[in-house]
Length: 261
Image 1 (cartoon, rainbow, N blue to C red):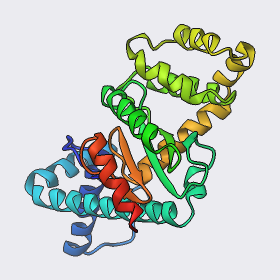
Image 2: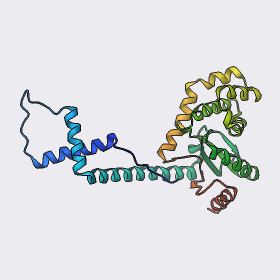
Image 3: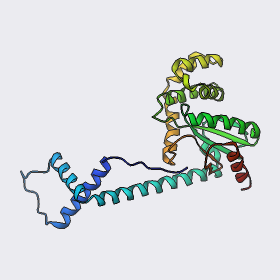
Image 4: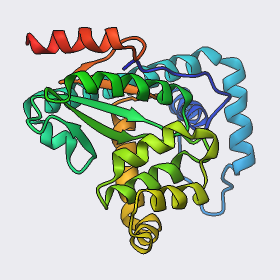
């Protein structure tokens, strides 16, 4: 799972960095005296002007500060990744928790998938995973973790609907319908799919609009953010990330690798 960063325009962190630099310069280059009552203080506008002036005169300081910030962020995410993978190896149940699972109940080889129901790449990966699990149903435990991207307007609603279906034991059937009908994702489609799967529609509606559904999805999102998952689909097997495309040969190679450990 590779962590990537994008370039942005000036952000509050940049301003804070420059502000700290200004205050440091003031402390190093001048003697301060106790503030007298009634003395004026810098207004927000004045402070912002000073910050921008420093940025213009010393842009390298801001760049260096942001580079250091990004490096520390990456180090924290890599540490979280290592801790996550270690937990996967040592005690898969801690990672799986209440997430949907299919395949082997033994949980000796655990394949964790972070996915988004509106992501076209996830839909392709879904088909590959179905083939892979058909061959290794008795050997591998597949675990689904939700990571609905904000760039996909129906991703969160679809995730919640799948969770609601899962409360009646139909997560994987519902998942199939979502991935195979990405162009139809909507509340009416979720209800019609629930009806086709013979779900209790009243319970489905309650679960669909429950706080528990949002809590469950957010927990997966938080885990993804902590370990630096920056896109979907992302997979790891027994603590080993899948590098490259989600293709059957790659999954087979990863299974062979972890089986020998």
